[in-house]
Amino acid sequence: MTDEPVGGVRVCRVFLVDDHAVFRSGVRAELAGQAGIEVVGEAGSVAEAVAGIGRVRPDVVLLDVHMPDGGGVAVLRSVLGTDPSGGPDTSGTPGASDAPVSTFLALSVSDAAEDVIAVIRGGARGYVTKTISGGELADAVRRVADGDAVFSPRLAGFVLDAFARAAPGPEEWGEPVHDPEVDSLTPREKEVLRLLARGYTYKEIAEKLFISVKTVETHASNVLRKTQQSNRHALTRWAQSRHLD
Image (tube, rainbow, N blue to C red; front, side):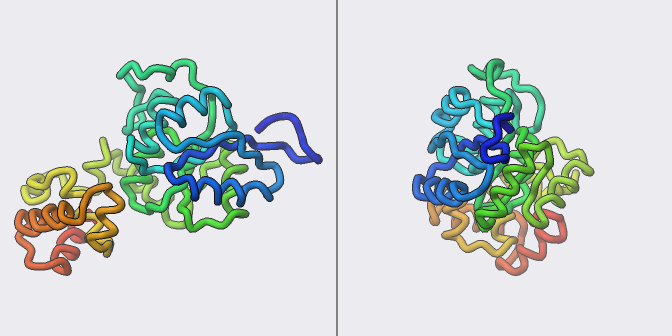
């Protein structure tokens, strides 16, 4: 946080990254009434976010996970110079070396384990869902600015489990090492499978993955065929038995 107190309270400078302007306005309004919080900028795309963060140099970046042009992981990679597995970025991303030292807090509608792990490995300090209240969000912002790790209930367990398994990447977390049926699925089919197992509808899956409902139906059909399951309920049990949910 900045060392300049306002009314006896240190001010934490926050930058908002989300592709929905209405949502950004709502977050800005919620944080406006919170002591010690000042929203100093916002962006609706990865490119805008990288440029804005470099220009404003905020204390905390509230980062959306899913955006059409790459999302939170792409911002983290550009600003912090990391790849999705948390290692150094060797791609030569412009601006990484002179990026400001900001703390990142993911703020997402998704509570999927793979999303949580991806942004944490990318360098985010915490992950909260969009069901959080204004007061709770302000508290989370202050806490990550002070060096704490902050998660919405149950999400921390995803991080602990993933690091305990020392999983090499999002596509392999929780999966058996040798399983021909699992290995036959494409990365996108695995994403659809996980969401199906969690009870999402085809329409909700399409919105989460930025694909059409028809494409979801095609992936679901392929998953059923490859796993030799007869229906969605059987598929859910199959996924749970392999820790793919």
